[in-house]
Image (tube, rainbow, N blue to C red; front, side, top):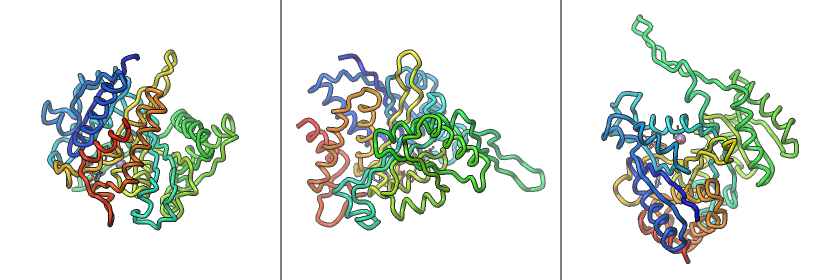
Length: 367
Ligand code: NAD
Ligand code: IPM
Ligand code: MN
């Protein structure tokens, strides 16, 4: 089997703990299935800053660019609160997204049957939930210029961020959303705020044009993003695919995470455009959650978001669809048996730590 080069960036806080379970899984797949994964590992976030004063080094960026896929844990934490803005831990992740041109962030929110009763929402609201948020990841207010704080000289300062979207950026992200909708329930809801933002007016217009030109078979609706947040909590099952910008996508996906029971459950894939010659996409896979400083180092973090991100890697980067399905089924089976990490714990279930959860999923996957 061909070599599959994975570059691992565990990062900070619970990042390395969650990544540890994926490393065990990769080793098991190499041993027992001759999967042919070759891994290399680098530093990102606060751990990279501590080592060399950068949130990610140029050498590690080169490795990320050369790999077939990057697996990313999490970055950040109070330890680095005072570091200069340019080298704060999160800057490493943003550089990866920008330099690898990972414009399409897929954040599926699936409520596993075993967790339907433990959601903070009513069981009937989340039971059977399977939605996909497609978040634009390399544009908008995250990267728009100017982005600065200026001194007005009168004792006042001005903080500026700029929301910018060009036609091609909206076309390509909506194209991804429409393509994915065709493999699912064939519905896309586009969210923006065209009642306040010029970029929202353009967003809605371009999504509608892209739809008309190439995807008229897909059902398209539009919603203001604030109302979208409300609808996500009121009746999330009305949605199939949601396509939205970088900042709205960040917030709406945290909301969607809680529909599944915990931030510790939500995986994501960040994809670039297919290479014109090889058809391969640059890709980075990461849980939606952060470094969870409050529980880091205790061995209690939920590794499911990280493991499910690896399932997405199998599916999207290596076309190992059967293995991806099996891994997702293994997660569901372990939950069905009543095993829970603390974040998804409920009465009558068995609480286990990060490593035990990883082991249980790997054992089911290999069985
Ligand atoms: P967070 O996601 O780290 O934590 C929010 C809450 O969810 C915490 O109570 C945490 O314990 C819990 N949680 C998160 N993941 C969990 C898991 N796998 N298992 C069990 N519980 C889990 O968000 P935050 O506290 O807002 O941010 C902490 C740091 O992480 C900040 O520095 C932030 O910038 C960074 N961050 C990084 C990423 C990333 O690396 N992709 C994403 C979000 C936040
Ligand atoms: C996420 C995170 C990141 C974001 C941060 C850590 C830069 O919140 O991936 O959701 O805002 O995109
Ligand atoms: Mn976020």
